[in-house]
Image 1: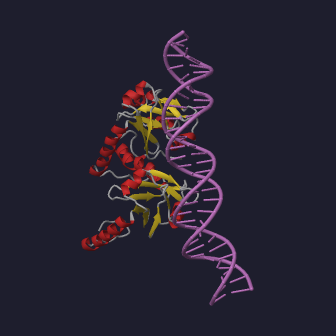
Image 2: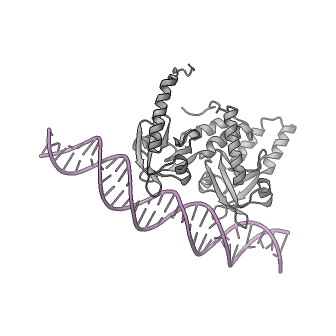
Image 3: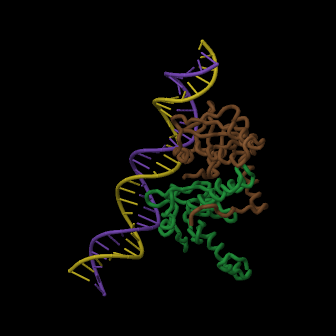
Length: 153
Length: 153
DNA sequence: TGGATATATATGGGATAGCATGGGATAAAA
DNA sequence: TTTTATCCCATGCTATCCCATATATATCCA
């Protein structure tokens, strides 16, 4: 399966359209519908982007909570209920709603940030700060990648 | 998996292309996509090169974290977002972006330095210095390779 | 063994296809 | 009708392909 990697900055035109970076489209291309799922990030002034199939995974993770528990309900409301499927146009662009633009504070440009199974969309200035914080955080907290679950050799 | 070994110097042409040394390509060849992952070294004026499978591995390990946790986000931002996948052309070359060239201070030539599971790319002059420093450092600090069981000294 | 011919690598340049971007036209919705 | 959302076309840029050459190592044959 392809991964979302690297960071790319694209422009928003006056119609609210942005090109999804070509490599990202290639990852999304292996999907049931020609588009992407966006939601407001619950932890950042940014958007989270997923391949449509990933929603299945999110739903599965929610199964870890007791049914009708308030926590599960909160999480489902914060994720699945907020998920917006956006179709690509013929050129591989999506149209951002005013609500999404407001939450992420987009101006003229959007930074598409590849994070493996998902990606984020930031205003370039905000991403610059976030990037530094993340790097510092990894160092000071001494974050390390956990051992593999069931990978290969 | 094969190892990246030895040091090779290749030229950058006016289009920003460099041949990845043949032996390195052989190591990278057994990969899901025909190319290499580069990122700016966080500790040197150099680039770090990885096999694409490395990123798969990192992504898998990150799956162990809760989704939307800040630790997962920090780690992904510091690794996957910084990783740039570069495809080989038909001749086994990659194209270096201006950003990468600037970070590593490349001029006309690049030294590909094999370091086992990864390699580095240096401007030849900078590598010469770095090499001496590393050798001196090993002597004065009395550095030795840890035992094979993974135990610290 | 020597010489000639392959095979692979490194390098250069021209041509082409794909991507990001912008704007107008058309179709659906309010 | 007015608005909104697609589609379609046009453009510049850059990535990538394809072809060509030089050098070096490997292979073959007389």
